[in-house]
Length: 453
Image 1: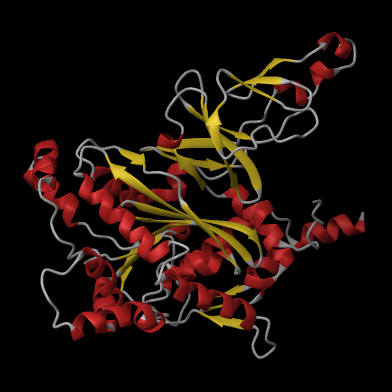
Image 2: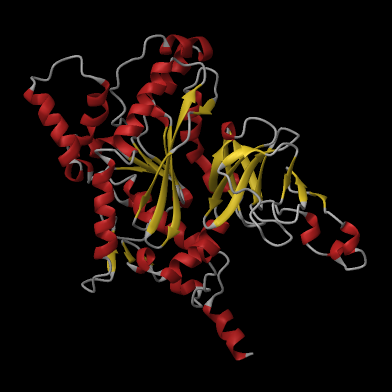
Protein backbone atom coordinates (compact mmCIF):
# COMPACT_ATOMS: atom_id res chain seq x y z
CA UNK A 1 0.00 0.00 0.00
CA UNK A 2 1.42 3.38 -1.02
CA UNK A 3 2.17 5.66 1.91
CA UNK A 4 1.77 9.38 1.63
CA UNK A 5 4.89 11.40 2.33
CA UNK A 6 4.75 13.07 5.76
CA UNK A 7 4.02 16.76 5.84
CA UNK A 8 7.07 18.92 5.36
CA UNK A 9 8.77 19.48 8.70
CA UNK A 10 12.07 21.15 9.54
CA UNK A 11 14.63 19.79 11.97
CA UNK A 12 13.60 22.50 14.43
CA UNK A 13 10.01 21.16 14.43
CA UNK A 14 11.30 17.80 15.66
CA UNK A 15 13.64 19.37 18.21
CA UNK A 16 10.72 21.38 19.61
CA UNK A 17 8.97 18.10 20.53
CA UNK A 18 11.67 17.26 23.11
CA UNK A 19 12.14 19.79 25.90
CA UNK A 20 14.40 18.60 28.72
CA UNK A 21 12.06 16.89 31.17
CA UNK A 22 9.06 16.58 28.84
CA UNK A 23 8.16 15.35 25.37
CA UNK A 24 5.18 16.27 23.24
CA UNK A 25 2.45 13.68 22.81
CA UNK A 26 2.93 13.83 19.04
CA UNK A 27 6.05 11.68 19.38
CA UNK A 28 3.67 8.81 20.21
CA UNK A 29 0.49 9.50 18.23
CA UNK A 30 1.39 11.49 15.11
CA UNK A 31 1.40 9.63 11.79
CA UNK A 32 3.69 12.31 10.32
CA UNK A 33 6.23 11.86 13.12
CA UNK A 34 6.13 8.08 12.67
CA UNK A 35 6.81 8.38 8.93
CA UNK A 36 9.74 10.70 9.64
CA UNK A 37 11.12 8.14 12.10
CA UNK A 38 11.13 5.56 9.34
CA UNK A 39 12.87 7.94 6.90
CA UNK A 40 15.42 9.37 9.33
CA UNK A 41 15.80 7.71 12.75
CA UNK A 42 15.81 4.10 11.55
CA UNK A 43 17.97 5.07 8.59
CA UNK A 44 20.66 7.01 10.45
CA UNK A 45 21.07 4.78 13.53
CA UNK A 46 22.40 1.23 13.86
CA UNK A 47 19.53 -1.25 14.13
CA UNK A 48 19.54 -4.92 15.15
CA UNK A 49 18.89 -7.33 12.28
CA UNK A 50 19.39 -10.82 13.71
CA UNK A 51 21.89 -13.29 15.13
CA UNK A 52 24.42 -15.12 12.98
CA UNK A 53 23.18 -18.48 14.30
CA UNK A 54 19.87 -17.84 12.51
CA UNK A 55 21.80 -18.28 9.26
CA UNK A 56 24.49 -20.85 10.14
CA UNK A 57 25.04 -22.40 6.69
CA UNK A 58 25.88 -20.96 3.29
CA UNK A 59 22.66 -19.97 1.57
CA UNK A 60 20.66 -19.73 4.79
CA UNK A 61 18.54 -16.59 4.92
CA UNK A 62 16.29 -14.83 7.38
CA UNK A 63 13.78 -12.16 6.29
CA UNK A 64 13.01 -9.29 8.65
CA UNK A 65 12.85 -5.50 8.55
CA UNK A 66 14.71 -2.39 9.67
CA UNK A 67 12.12 0.23 10.48
CA UNK A 68 9.68 -0.25 7.61
CA UNK A 69 12.32 -1.52 5.17
CA UNK A 70 12.17 -5.26 4.34
CA UNK A 71 15.64 -6.83 4.43
CA UNK A 72 17.27 -10.25 4.13
CA UNK A 73 20.04 -11.55 6.36
CA UNK A 74 21.90 -14.24 4.38
CA UNK A 75 25.05 -16.34 4.74
CA UNK A 76 27.12 -15.73 1.59
CA UNK A 77 29.33 -18.27 -0.17
CA UNK A 78 32.41 -16.82 1.54
CA UNK A 79 30.89 -17.56 4.95
CA UNK A 80 30.14 -13.92 5.79
CA UNK A 81 26.69 -12.66 6.79
CA UNK A 82 25.24 -10.12 4.35
CA UNK A 83 22.17 -7.89 4.71
CA UNK A 84 20.28 -7.03 1.52
CA UNK A 85 17.19 -5.02 0.70
CA UNK A 86 14.38 -7.49 0.06
CA UNK A 87 13.52 -6.13 -3.39
CA UNK A 88 14.24 -7.29 -6.92
CA UNK A 89 15.92 -4.46 -8.86
CA UNK A 90 13.75 -5.27 -11.88
CA UNK A 91 10.08 -4.87 -10.90
CA UNK A 92 10.43 -4.48 -7.16
CA UNK A 93 9.09 -7.92 -6.21
CA UNK A 94 10.11 -9.23 -2.80
CA UNK A 95 12.82 -11.82 -3.26
CA UNK A 96 12.23 -13.70 0.00
CA UNK A 97 8.67 -14.12 1.19
CA UNK A 98 9.27 -16.96 3.66
CA UNK A 99 10.52 -15.97 7.09
CA UNK A 100 13.58 -18.19 6.70
CA UNK A 101 15.06 -20.91 4.52
CA UNK A 102 18.03 -21.87 2.36
CA UNK A 103 18.30 -20.38 -1.12
CA UNK A 104 21.31 -22.44 -2.21
CA UNK A 105 23.94 -20.57 -4.20
CA UNK A 106 21.67 -17.82 -5.51
CA UNK A 107 18.37 -15.96 -5.15
CA UNK A 108 15.87 -16.20 -8.02
CA UNK A 109 13.08 -13.67 -8.42
CA UNK A 110 9.73 -15.50 -8.67
CA UNK A 111 8.39 -13.02 -11.25
CA UNK A 112 10.84 -12.90 -14.19
CA UNK A 113 13.63 -15.21 -12.94
CA UNK A 114 16.35 -12.60 -12.62
CA UNK A 115 18.91 -14.31 -10.39
CA UNK A 116 21.45 -12.96 -7.93
CA UNK A 117 24.39 -14.20 -5.90
CA UNK A 118 23.86 -14.29 -2.17
CA UNK A 119 25.77 -11.00 -1.82
CA UNK A 120 23.16 -9.40 -4.12
CA UNK A 121 25.28 -9.19 -7.28
CA UNK A 122 23.41 -9.86 -10.52
CA UNK A 123 24.01 -13.40 -11.77
CA UNK A 124 21.77 -13.80 -14.80
CA UNK A 125 18.81 -12.32 -16.73
CA UNK A 126 16.72 -14.58 -18.98
CA UNK A 127 16.81 -13.48 -22.65
CA UNK A 128 19.32 -10.81 -21.79
CA UNK A 129 19.77 -10.02 -25.48
CA UNK A 130 16.48 -8.15 -25.22
CA UNK A 131 18.36 -5.48 -23.25
CA UNK A 132 21.15 -4.99 -25.80
CA UNK A 133 21.63 -1.33 -26.73
CA UNK A 134 18.93 -0.24 -24.22
CA UNK A 135 21.30 1.32 -21.71
CA UNK A 136 20.52 -1.21 -18.97
CA UNK A 137 24.24 -1.56 -18.20
CA UNK A 138 24.30 2.10 -17.17
CA UNK A 139 21.48 1.79 -14.62
CA UNK A 140 21.52 0.97 -10.92
CA UNK A 141 19.19 -1.97 -11.60
CA UNK A 142 21.87 -4.04 -13.29
CA UNK A 143 24.01 -3.99 -10.15
CA UNK A 144 21.64 -6.44 -8.47
CA UNK A 145 19.91 -6.52 -5.11
CA UNK A 146 21.06 -3.47 -3.21
CA UNK A 147 23.03 -4.25 -0.05
CA UNK A 148 22.21 -2.35 3.14
CA UNK A 149 24.47 0.67 3.67
CA UNK A 150 26.74 -0.71 6.40
CA UNK A 151 26.69 -3.98 8.35
CA UNK A 152 28.57 -5.17 11.41
CA UNK A 153 28.71 -8.59 13.05
CA UNK A 154 29.50 -7.99 16.72
CA UNK A 155 30.08 -11.25 18.55
CA UNK A 156 27.33 -12.91 16.54
CA UNK A 157 24.80 -10.05 16.68
CA UNK A 158 24.15 -8.46 13.29
CA UNK A 159 23.53 -4.70 13.20
CA UNK A 160 23.01 -2.50 10.16
CA UNK A 161 22.80 1.19 9.26
CA UNK A 162 20.58 1.81 6.25
CA UNK A 163 22.28 5.09 5.39
CA UNK A 164 25.36 4.76 3.18
CA UNK A 165 27.15 7.32 5.36
CA UNK A 166 26.80 8.27 8.99
CA UNK A 167 27.95 7.51 12.52
CA UNK A 168 30.29 4.53 12.85
CA UNK A 169 29.32 1.38 14.72
CA UNK A 170 31.93 2.05 17.42
CA UNK A 171 30.90 5.68 17.93
CA UNK A 172 27.23 4.76 18.06
CA UNK A 173 27.48 2.02 20.71
CA UNK A 174 30.64 2.94 22.64
CA UNK A 175 30.77 1.35 26.12
CA UNK A 176 27.28 -0.12 25.86
CA UNK A 177 28.71 -3.13 23.99
CA UNK A 178 29.88 -4.40 27.39
CA UNK A 179 26.38 -5.81 27.95
CA UNK A 180 26.64 -7.95 24.81
CA UNK A 181 30.14 -8.95 25.87
CA UNK A 182 28.87 -10.14 29.24
CA UNK A 183 26.01 -12.09 27.69
CA UNK A 184 28.31 -13.90 25.25
CA UNK A 185 31.07 -14.42 27.82
CA UNK A 186 28.61 -16.35 29.97
CA UNK A 187 29.16 -19.20 27.54
CA UNK A 188 32.24 -21.27 28.45
CA UNK A 189 32.98 -21.27 24.73
CA UNK A 190 32.21 -17.56 24.23
CA UNK A 191 29.41 -18.33 21.81
CA UNK A 192 25.60 -18.13 21.65
CA UNK A 193 23.13 -20.02 19.49
CA UNK A 194 19.53 -19.07 18.78
CA UNK A 195 17.14 -21.40 20.60
CA UNK A 196 14.12 -21.78 18.34
CA UNK A 197 11.85 -19.12 16.84
CA UNK A 198 10.90 -16.06 18.90
CA UNK A 199 7.70 -15.55 20.79
CA UNK A 200 5.88 -12.97 18.71
CA UNK A 201 2.81 -10.84 19.35
CA UNK A 202 1.28 -7.47 18.59
CA UNK A 203 0.95 -4.42 20.81
CA UNK A 204 -1.54 -1.69 19.93
CA UNK A 205 0.78 1.11 21.01
CA UNK A 206 3.76 3.18 19.93
CA UNK A 207 7.11 1.35 19.84
CA UNK A 208 8.80 3.92 22.11
CA UNK A 209 6.50 3.02 25.00
CA UNK A 210 8.00 -0.46 25.08
CA UNK A 211 11.57 0.84 24.85
CA UNK A 212 11.00 3.31 27.71
CA UNK A 213 9.41 0.66 29.90
CA UNK A 214 12.59 -1.44 29.92
CA UNK A 215 14.26 1.00 32.33
CA UNK A 216 11.12 2.17 34.15
CA UNK A 217 11.72 0.83 37.67
CA UNK A 218 8.80 2.56 39.40
CA UNK A 219 6.11 0.44 37.76
CA UNK A 220 6.85 -3.25 38.65
CA UNK A 221 5.48 -3.23 42.18
CA UNK A 222 2.38 -1.34 40.96
CA UNK A 223 1.51 -2.65 37.50
CA UNK A 224 2.48 -6.26 38.32
CA UNK A 225 0.71 -6.48 41.67
CA UNK A 226 -2.16 -8.36 40.03
CA UNK A 227 0.12 -11.06 38.61
CA UNK A 228 3.44 -11.30 40.46
CA UNK A 229 1.82 -9.91 43.61
CA UNK A 230 -0.86 -12.59 43.57
CA UNK A 231 1.73 -15.33 43.05
CA UNK A 232 3.76 -14.06 46.01
CA UNK A 233 0.68 -13.94 48.26
CA UNK A 234 -0.19 -17.54 47.38
CA UNK A 235 3.37 -18.63 48.16
CA UNK A 236 3.29 -16.78 51.49
CA UNK A 237 -0.05 -18.42 52.35
CA UNK A 238 1.71 -21.77 51.95
CA UNK A 239 4.30 -20.74 54.51
CA UNK A 240 7.10 -19.78 52.09
CA UNK A 241 8.31 -23.38 51.69
CA UNK A 242 11.90 -23.90 50.56
CA UNK A 243 13.46 -24.50 48.20
CA UNK A 244 11.51 -22.10 46.05
CA UNK A 245 10.60 -23.47 42.61
CA UNK A 246 12.18 -21.72 39.59
CA UNK A 247 8.87 -20.02 38.81
CA UNK A 248 8.94 -18.19 42.13
CA UNK A 249 12.58 -17.19 41.67
CA UNK A 250 11.57 -15.57 38.39
CA UNK A 251 8.35 -13.86 39.36
CA UNK A 252 8.80 -12.79 43.00
CA UNK A 253 11.50 -10.12 42.38
CA UNK A 254 8.99 -8.07 40.39
CA UNK A 255 7.40 -7.21 43.72
CA UNK A 256 10.61 -5.83 45.25
CA UNK A 257 10.17 -2.47 47.04
CA UNK A 258 11.20 0.91 45.68
CA UNK A 259 14.38 0.81 47.77
CA UNK A 260 15.56 -2.31 45.92
CA UNK A 261 15.23 -0.57 42.57
CA UNK A 262 16.75 2.67 43.84
CA UNK A 263 19.85 0.83 45.03
CA UNK A 264 20.00 -1.17 41.81
CA UNK A 265 21.25 1.85 39.83
CA UNK A 266 20.90 2.88 36.18
CA UNK A 267 23.79 3.43 33.79
CA UNK A 268 23.38 5.56 30.66
CA UNK A 269 25.63 5.79 27.63
CA UNK A 270 25.57 8.31 24.75
CA UNK A 271 23.15 7.82 21.83
CA UNK A 272 20.24 6.48 23.87
CA UNK A 273 21.71 3.29 25.33
CA UNK A 274 21.45 2.36 29.00
CA UNK A 275 20.75 -0.39 31.51
CA UNK A 276 19.22 -1.03 34.89
CA UNK A 277 20.96 -3.24 37.41
CA UNK A 278 24.35 -1.61 37.97
CA UNK A 279 24.83 -3.08 41.46
CA UNK A 280 22.28 -5.91 41.53
CA UNK A 281 19.07 -6.88 39.74
CA UNK A 282 16.06 -9.17 39.82
CA UNK A 283 18.35 -11.86 38.38
CA UNK A 284 20.99 -11.69 41.12
CA UNK A 285 19.66 -14.39 43.46
CA UNK A 286 18.86 -17.21 41.06
CA UNK A 287 19.91 -20.65 42.30
CA UNK A 288 23.29 -21.93 41.19
CA UNK A 289 23.29 -24.48 38.37
CA UNK A 290 25.44 -27.55 39.12
CA UNK A 291 28.52 -27.76 36.93
CA UNK A 292 28.20 -24.29 35.41
CA UNK A 293 30.71 -22.42 37.56
CA UNK A 294 33.19 -25.26 37.14
CA UNK A 295 32.86 -25.07 33.35
CA UNK A 296 33.34 -21.31 33.45
CA UNK A 297 36.43 -21.61 35.67
CA UNK A 298 37.95 -24.10 33.28
CA UNK A 299 37.34 -21.73 30.37
CA UNK A 300 38.29 -18.39 31.97
CA UNK A 301 40.00 -19.02 35.28
CA UNK A 302 38.23 -18.55 38.62
CA UNK A 303 38.65 -14.78 38.98
CA UNK A 304 37.44 -14.00 35.46
CA UNK A 305 34.58 -16.51 35.70
CA UNK A 306 33.41 -14.95 38.95
CA UNK A 307 33.55 -11.44 37.48
CA UNK A 308 31.45 -12.51 34.49
CA UNK A 309 28.82 -14.28 36.57
CA UNK A 310 28.62 -11.55 39.23
CA UNK A 311 27.60 -8.99 36.58
CA UNK A 312 23.79 -9.21 36.70
CA UNK A 313 22.51 -6.36 34.60
CA UNK A 314 18.73 -6.27 34.35
CA UNK A 315 17.60 -4.70 31.06
CA UNK A 316 20.04 -3.16 28.60
CA UNK A 317 18.40 -0.94 25.97
CA UNK A 318 20.20 -0.63 22.66
CA UNK A 319 18.53 2.37 21.11
CA UNK A 320 16.42 2.53 19.10
CA UNK A 321 14.63 -0.78 19.32
CA UNK A 322 16.03 -3.76 21.27
CA UNK A 323 16.58 -4.85 24.84
CA UNK A 324 18.82 -7.67 26.06
CA UNK A 325 19.02 -9.52 29.37
CA UNK A 326 22.53 -10.90 29.74
CA UNK A 327 21.96 -13.12 32.81
CA UNK A 328 19.20 -15.07 31.08
CA UNK A 329 20.26 -14.70 27.43
CA UNK A 330 17.18 -12.98 26.09
CA UNK A 331 16.63 -10.31 23.43
CA UNK A 332 13.41 -8.43 22.71
CA UNK A 333 13.04 -6.69 19.37
CA UNK A 334 10.43 -3.92 19.06
CA UNK A 335 9.45 -3.54 15.41
CA UNK A 336 7.33 -0.45 14.64
CA UNK A 337 4.42 -1.03 12.26
CA UNK A 338 2.64 2.28 12.77
CA UNK A 339 2.32 5.10 15.30
CA UNK A 340 0.05 2.85 17.36
CA UNK A 341 1.17 -0.66 16.38
CA UNK A 342 4.31 -2.57 17.39
CA UNK A 343 5.36 -6.16 16.72
CA UNK A 344 7.33 -7.64 19.63
CA UNK A 345 9.73 -10.53 19.09
CA UNK A 346 11.25 -12.21 22.15
CA UNK A 347 14.29 -14.40 21.42
CA UNK A 348 16.28 -16.69 23.71
CA UNK A 349 19.80 -18.04 23.21
CA UNK A 350 21.71 -21.13 24.28
CA UNK A 351 25.03 -20.67 26.07
CA UNK A 352 27.21 -23.03 24.07
CA UNK A 353 29.07 -25.38 26.42
CA UNK A 354 26.88 -24.58 29.45
CA UNK A 355 24.45 -26.94 31.24
CA UNK A 356 21.05 -27.29 29.54
CA UNK A 357 19.33 -26.24 32.77
CA UNK A 358 20.29 -22.63 32.02
CA UNK A 359 18.40 -22.72 28.73
CA UNK A 360 15.41 -24.31 30.47
CA UNK A 361 15.33 -21.43 32.97
CA UNK A 362 15.63 -18.88 30.17
CA UNK A 363 12.75 -20.51 28.27
CA UNK A 364 10.64 -20.51 31.43
CA UNK A 365 11.34 -16.82 31.99
CA UNK A 366 10.39 -16.02 28.41
CA UNK A 367 7.09 -17.90 28.69
CA UNK A 368 6.19 -16.47 32.10
CA UNK A 369 7.12 -12.85 31.41
CA UNK A 370 7.04 -12.16 27.66
CA UNK A 371 4.82 -14.71 25.92
CA UNK A 372 1.35 -13.95 24.55
CA UNK A 373 0.20 -16.25 27.37
CA UNK A 374 2.29 -14.46 30.01
CA UNK A 375 0.69 -13.49 33.29
CA UNK A 376 3.13 -10.58 33.70
CA UNK A 377 3.62 -9.10 30.23
CA UNK A 378 -0.07 -8.35 29.86
CA UNK A 379 0.11 -5.95 32.79
CA UNK A 380 2.51 -3.83 30.73
CA UNK A 381 0.45 -4.23 27.58
CA UNK A 382 -2.61 -2.91 29.40
CA UNK A 383 -0.66 0.18 30.46
CA UNK A 384 0.71 0.82 26.95
CA UNK A 385 -2.69 0.63 25.34
CA UNK A 386 -4.30 2.84 27.99
CA UNK A 387 -1.53 5.38 27.42
CA UNK A 388 -1.97 5.24 23.64
CA UNK A 389 -5.65 6.03 24.10
CA UNK A 390 -5.11 8.59 26.86
CA UNK A 391 -2.60 10.62 24.86
CA UNK A 392 -5.38 11.61 22.48
CA UNK A 393 -6.98 13.51 25.35
CA UNK A 394 -6.86 17.29 24.97
CA UNK A 395 -6.19 17.64 28.69
CA UNK A 396 -2.42 18.04 28.31
CA UNK A 397 -0.05 18.09 25.34
CA UNK A 398 3.14 17.10 27.18
CA UNK A 399 4.37 13.83 28.69
CA UNK A 400 6.49 14.13 31.84
CA UNK A 401 9.85 12.34 32.26
CA UNK A 402 11.06 14.52 35.14
CA UNK A 403 11.93 12.01 37.86
CA UNK A 404 15.35 12.95 39.35
CA UNK A 405 15.79 15.63 36.70
CA UNK A 406 18.75 17.82 37.78
CA UNK A 407 16.92 21.06 37.03
CA UNK A 408 19.26 22.07 34.23
CA UNK A 409 20.23 20.85 30.80
CA UNK A 410 21.72 17.36 31.04
CA UNK A 411 24.90 16.16 29.38
CA UNK A 412 24.29 12.86 27.60
CA UNK A 413 27.69 12.79 25.91
CA UNK A 414 29.33 10.81 28.73
CA UNK A 415 28.56 7.58 30.57
CA UNK A 416 26.75 8.17 33.88
CA UNK A 417 25.49 6.05 36.81
CA UNK A 418 22.56 7.31 38.86
CA UNK A 419 19.77 6.31 41.24
CA UNK A 420 17.93 3.25 39.95
CA UNK A 421 14.57 5.03 39.72
CA UNK A 422 15.74 7.99 37.64
CA UNK A 423 14.07 8.73 34.31
CA UNK A 424 17.39 9.94 32.90
CA UNK A 425 17.54 6.97 30.52
CA UNK A 426 14.20 7.97 29.02
CA UNK A 427 15.48 11.51 28.58
CA UNK A 428 18.68 10.05 27.11
CA UNK A 429 16.61 8.12 24.57
CA UNK A 430 14.69 11.20 23.49
CA UNK A 431 17.90 13.20 23.21
CA UNK A 432 19.19 10.49 20.83
CA UNK A 433 15.81 10.36 19.08
CA UNK A 434 16.00 14.06 18.22
CA UNK A 435 19.68 13.77 17.26
CA UNK A 436 19.24 10.99 14.72
CA UNK A 437 15.87 12.22 13.49
CA UNK A 438 17.34 15.60 12.53
CA UNK A 439 20.75 14.46 11.28
CA UNK A 440 19.55 14.48 7.67
CA UNK A 441 16.48 16.70 7.93
CA UNK A 442 16.48 20.19 6.38
CA UNK A 443 16.61 23.23 8.65
CA UNK A 444 13.95 25.96 8.42
CA UNK A 445 16.27 28.28 6.52
CA UNK A 446 16.77 25.60 3.87
CA UNK A 447 13.05 25.05 3.47
CA UNK A 448 12.45 28.78 3.25
CA UNK A 449 15.12 29.01 0.57
CA UNK A 450 13.50 26.22 -1.44
CA UNK A 451 10.10 27.92 -1.14
CA UNK A 452 11.55 31.19 -2.43
CA UNK A 453 13.09 29.68 -5.53
